[in-house]
Length: 562
Image 1 (cartoon, helix red, strand yellow):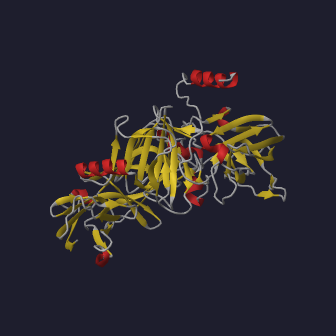
Image 2: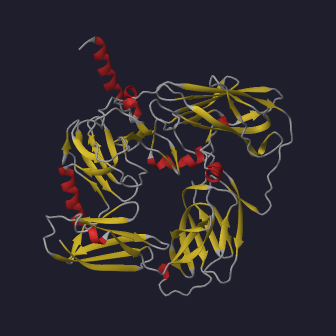
Image 3: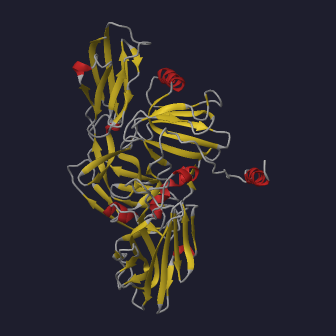
């Protein structure tokens, strides 16, 4: 071993003593063809950051998936939603790799999985294995790629986790040398945000989105004149790109400087799952819900606990001199490609509008908040708000309805954990009380929240403000056979399960009185694949029982011959 290699080994050994430090060593390609990504680490999604990278699988399912290093199967999770069929491999270097949306597992893993599913008599399982119960070798085929769970198309979702903390790390650090990336991030827009009652931009308390102009050489400039006074924040909308693909990705590094001093720095290299919902504070949540656009704040709200954010004075810019403030955004990806946007903010003395607090109640971000009115009780435990909210409540009453429609606030606000909402049931006629539930109304549609009946009230947990009322679900689910005449010929039976409101909560299939494993996909289609180890040739009696969240039950029976 030469001196350089010896020093590298010594450095890795020394750094490994630091809690939470894991060497970003290169990993094997889990696929048999060159790497192209359809999704990147830390990308902004609804209520969460993307926790891995998505490998393209040439637009098809059934591609061999290899273990990226030696280890053992630590966990097998199967669900109609989320990661679908997912495999977790633990490795000697202190990491766990995750493979999601799989079509199927190799023979050893599949046999163990089916054994446990029949033992638990359920399709959806989350199995934790003892170390080395199922060992794997580096490069071994452990599964085949698919499109299971909440997947929008065939691909492999891949994660690298710190085994001890279960924090997710950016897997691209292990593959950056095998990805062609010469394209820098691109800024799609900026937003200037006056702090309520403390700042003003161009004479208004409203957010300003100035127009960006891109020259032929790619250089971007801000077209409008920006005049501000007091405290303001900035937000940026941007995407990253790679060679040989039209996909867009999240931006790894964002820096903001004012007058050559860096006031904000974001480097999304790792996060914990308990932190992922803080995304709703990192972005301008109102802009996301209203216009479906992610503007990433370059200032930190007081209730935001994301550890990869650093800022001076929370990133708030104080415009208190009548002069030009030089602003520069610098965005970078992991390959070192950077983009810059420089613009000016003119400090101009102007009256700072004060918010209208008439009919509003101030909810403090650092404390518990309670609200009550006729037919409603709302409790927000401490830690739910990212910033103070001047809460506004309104109500739409209808004596013929089960309950009034309660409007919680006039702008979208996300709650970090859960708030307790209790609504009064003004027309209580059902003997089966669990058939009542809180619903959220959006664009004319009711989304079932559920809840518990308590002396004429329904108690439920919510995660954002909006319009809420009570509905009832007294109708059983519907079971629809799919291709019934071809079922025996294709060696499977399929049915679609639907429900009018509360949703299918559980189902059970039995053949000749014995449990039968029906797999379920995200489209609520359940499939029984004829199993020669458990099903004999001949005539059989099938019974399907489906129950929704309100306890309404549907039963389907039929005879089939194999």
